[in-house]
Image (cartoon, rainbow, N blue to C red; front, side, top):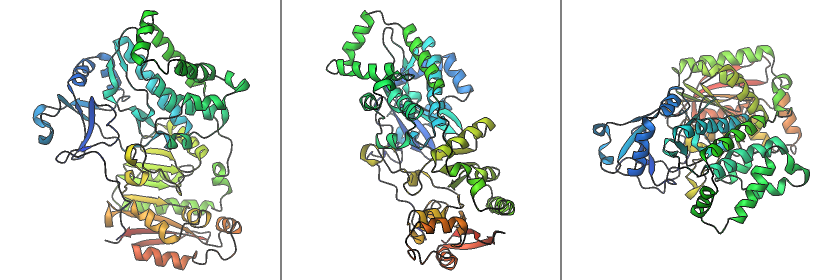
Length: 489
């Protein structure tokens, strides 16, 4: 039996079966807990008082009804898990988001839409006397391609004369990555992945020198922001707030700032240039018959699996087979390594209102590791992405030849996602024969004879060791074979 992907031990102590979310420790006023498949939030006295005011506010009820804030209800005291009774003033229950992803796994369009939702929520909260104490991109998640705000504990009463406390986080995790890509054409994902708290104004200031400083949003939100941070570096935040109050800073000014940020973010765009993968459907070696046969194979495999709850489509490209999978599954993660292709897919899915497919940007030979405090504040992709079915279509040759990953390691990695599902899981995998034009192209860039084991007989032997092969299909082109396997117990 293939071992599951290792899940790092949490440095946060579980309390009698309740598992604290390793990413929720930064706000001591409340804590997210996972108990028996439920997502709960324990609130201390001050946070509970804020919640009571928030729950009675019409603006919050509207956001809940529109699905812009995750579904939240206060638990009846009698329903609170026994081991949590007495630990919190109030316990909330949240809806479960289909998959927890992180901003460095989102495309440009996703990050921009997440930023716009955050600003929309703040603009609704301020006139009602509330604000958000955080501005982090990590406060948002996705239902398919719909962003949703998840940090209900971030709402607090607004205090007259004070600026938005979340402005710096908003810049670091949302605005600055957008500026980086919109103005300089640099993919933001590696930058965010390397810095859990986001990009600093000082970092961007060095990139936006000369005339670049006059590009939209840069002078005010990068150069001026950095200068002010340096000026007040030795001044407490309480003193700064007092100075602003004395100077007549008002809630109207906060709203004006949020409105200006909204207009700026809407102006930012990055239509990605054409890449090899953005035209893959037209340049690959598939025929129309190949595509039709492949679609039938995928649809039949998932239909027989009895509507799997989660499907991973690894190497999703334009999402053709993710859409097929979505007709037979509860939720599909469409993971694509090319940020431009992933963004095109997101925009098409968004236009279609598709809520069953979540597109993500990720180099599958270098997937997201654990990060943050103790390496578990943000879970690795392997730790988060257990699935009932995995699609690995036109992927194996890119890993085995293009990235020199041994075939046994590729198969073990794919089957690791099915470790929880066990023998009930399904792997749909495509092997591209060495004489296929795409494989030949990859092999031409490698030393001759470096991959003696890359052949169909060896792949089938390795697959058979790990799976019961339920079905195989050689595509009409004759240079690619599809396999449906169930992990051995």
